[in-house]
Length: 111
Length: 112
Image (cartoon, rainbow over all chains, first blue to last red; front, side):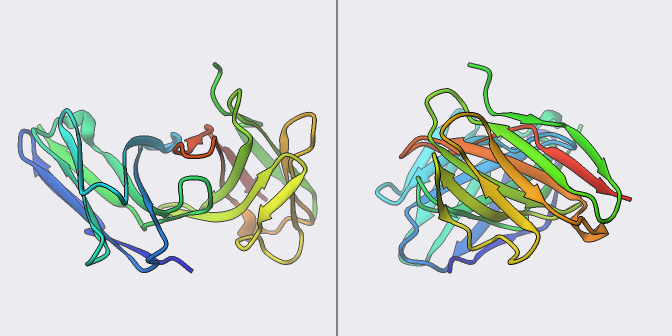
């Protein structure tokens, strides 16, 4: 089955800096890679996703890159703000089946 | 669209009791997934259902846990004879083919 590894487990940045979170996956059949943001006590919320037929996707301050050959994908947040502080999860799978989640990254943005 | 609705939000059960968690998917979504999240951990897949069918239950414990998604009504995750180790947040998500998951607000189960 799929195995998704996520790094780092914690990330601390100053407001305005960029943050990068990296994930690797094991199953070549996976073709869908979403990222979720979870605030304390809240539900995970989809912030961006990428499918295996593209290498990069951007939505305002958030971008995701995918390297299928190396089986890794990354989340990039630019111009970070305190409200970006949360736990971020990557996941891999198919868009209509089981998703396997990474262990999560606690992002703290200091004002 | 009310989103994915889960109830109850909080559930307290004594050891040995049964827990029933409900999930109503978003309107138009026919795929339902259940995940478990232990404190300060990631989301672990439990089961994937479509109406009246279990598609993938590879993450479900072999005993005490069951799930259904009937033709009418919400999806139900049932835990029989709960133990302290069942204490966790249980999230339901729904999707249509090709779309990302939308998660519900979760049910926080506490076994005392």
